[in-house]
Image (tube, rainbow over all chains, first blue to last red; front, top):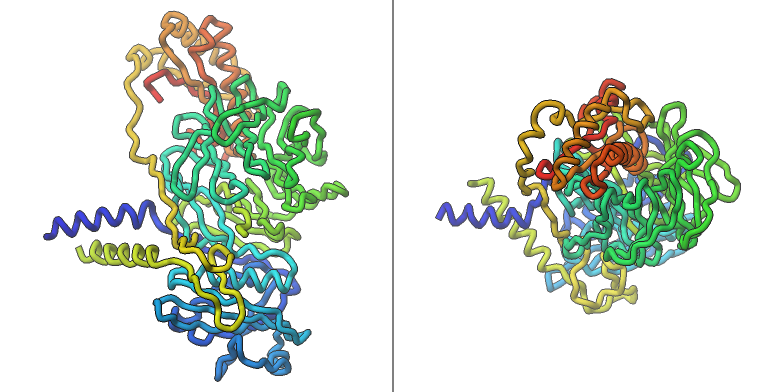
Length: 427
Length: 189
């Protein structure tokens, strides 16, 4: 009997716990001066899902954006819901610019119906709401959707609370490629290895990750389906294969290969076929990134003596230099609107995130850490996720695009977190 | 036992929740559209949402170690496999010339032997650019071996960038050990 139980336990553990579970913890280290005060009333019936199960996550999401300040509310009796009539002067007197109310109701089938409504208290307008039917384990997804709705209605930009992030955690000699919600919760291990994993890149549909794994004692580019865990080799030529970047249509990967000597940029189909070279230099050409319109490939090259960022037509052609200040500018990333280039610059020996306005060539350094790597724009362009080292420990930092609002995400159970990649918006 | 049993129950509960997750075919009662919280689309299909779906994990950590290599490679000058570099330098320094010559001779005399050269950098800067810098180092060693008579197809030059430091520190004494090329023979990797 005992053995039978143990066998069952072991089997279940294979499914339930493939790796150490340790969600990222978030610490906010700066704030914007102007944050919109918003009242998020507890939803009527919410205790059926747990105290503030939904509204606490909506509140945390909105505050994490740096654009909102959730008000502390006195006990409300009765609780206003999406079908209550709202007294605007009453909410104005609580200094709320916006108000979220809602309700949770149990359904006979065991699921829940969650409804909410958003009000602009200043303009005294009903800004709409949504009803969701969800299973009890979809609380977080529902809360993120509500936060996305509120964020978009009040700022005009898409909310990114329902998106996911990928990153690598190194603990001792173990490397794990992990996927988590944008707030660092609900992480799952897509790949565990005793050899390094770097450069995860989301396919535009969010279903696959390309990355570089050193499991064969050399860098090889894989494409990994997150739906079924199937991996395929996208580039495993003689020499090194690295730096994958998806074209916006998801049909092509730009990669860096050394198969013809040196490090040069090639295009390859995600299944590994159709390889063709697009740079021809005696220098290191690497870190390709497509512009969002697919017309350009930005990349790092030391053809001028020091590593700088260049761009070339994505079909090939003569490269143009893009960065001119400083002697070390690497890791180009285009903002989703294609107007801003983020990259890592060496500034008096410190590696920091720079933003360059591509129209005006204006450059601004937006971090004050000194070992920043791998910047990654949120799909709405408002935040940049990056890897840095604080106190000897690798962690992720999210910085608003104006550099004013910062937060840190570290592994709660230790280990170095690095190589972040913010996933796409899934419509 | 108690802990395992608790985990078993948790696992069963999690599975039930995953299985039990599907979206509603019904409409809302107050006119607002019923939207699936995961897909953001009107709830209609029976497919499970992303939050409840489990990403299937792939575990490579159970793989075995490398095989055995020629014992002659484990003593004398052929046991020396690492070439170290100064900061931002990629050429093989004179002090390593004897080591490279000995390996070129071995490769020349053992045409079946295969070598993997892994170039490495210190931790500073971009991981991917460092893959490029490490490749420049391993390409340089390969070029020298071939000039000394080894065959091109015997040697694969690759880069590990900054990913496999020999020394874990964050100062020049560690960095100087990490700017290196390592020569490995078939069976050793």
